Length: 217
Image (cartoon, rainbow, N blue to C red):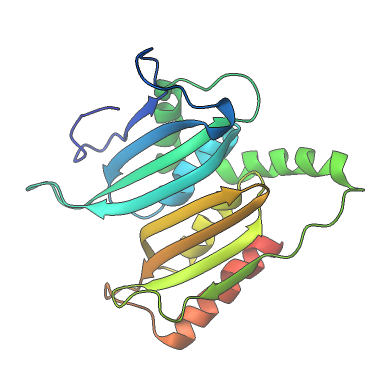
């Protein structure tokens, strides 16, 4: 995992694939750990999630949290457990390069994922229809943030769509806990409003409905 300063504009990332033969080797379905650190800014979560989806990496679990290195402002630390859908894992340098392009707008993740999704759905027309996504507000989640809970069928680009929906509503994701159990994704996102505090109840409910609509399209 890279130890470069997180205050740089360039994302810091690394794949921990445990190549040291003295360390225990996890089964391939469990995946490897991917760590990304970069300055806190809007669009980080959907950008990282979108790049992972473009590289056909399945997210097994993920954690996002804000950190404050000494005299370096606020940074985001994202720790992902990912596995390759097909073939081998991409190199960390390639992921970093695509993440930079996603953040500066030169990589159109939405269009690329739309092509992927169209191809993904075609062979599955006769498959059983997945249950609709469910999005709600945790009533006793946190005193410092609003907790949005998402339960949905796992699919390519799911986290990207969730992240985009949250960003489009103008909230900040302060932390997140993501897990995939079989074909089901169970996620919790701790979000705050422009004032840095929890959302008022009506706004929180509207946000949950908007995320649910975005996932149901």
